[in-house]
Image 1 (cartoon, rainbow, N blue to C red):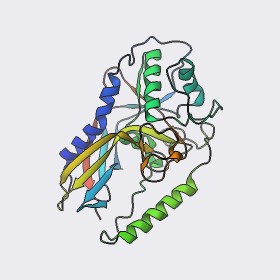
Image 2: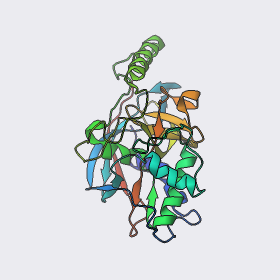
Image 3: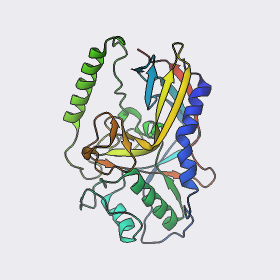
Image 4: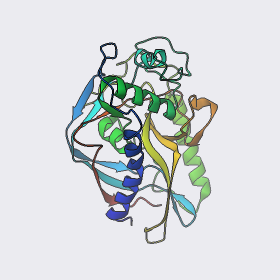
Length: 293
């Protein structure tokens, strides 16, 4: 069984890129400008959720189901009400601070798609500099907390026979086939998928969203203790109707670059706001139960 200490270490590794991006040159230091409006944010109160850890977990040299952990958000969290729109992103492009979005979408009231994780960092640096307010991508845990009932745990069934690779292959096929059928063909206007109980629009709908969480590969021994943990920050967690892992330079997920799971058809992002008084979210993790099979 994973200890709470080890889970905290994994969370710390996942959160590390936030500190790096927040200290990037020019981040959040520029004056506010009237031609760059601040996005609308929803302030979420502290709370606790049960969350299936992201990444790949191995036991006995074979894939196992990731554990479910209790994630406690102990400070308020300000999340963009909707995804970054085409109009929002075009301001950054016109300023010469962001690459042109790869989708070719022109409707200003739709989420911008065809952006890589690196493109999101360019937008964050520009918006922070122009407004004097610090922004960043949410972590995977923060995204799940904000999504609330719209967060989908689509892990493989824990009842699968671990010694039978055929069962696993069939389960993966069934899961991925349902994902393809559920995928939207094109981004819809903001708000088309309604609001969740937190008042956030289009969570787990319209487009998939980048997070700042690195892909991790965790190896457990027979007792459930961690024997190896490797983070690959060239690959980030993507959330939406399901979870996927994407290389940071990918703009069109359908062209490839997915580490695991069915590639999202449209890939955008929304931001969280960093309060001046603290550099990022403080998370407390505790194991709810092991989920090996």
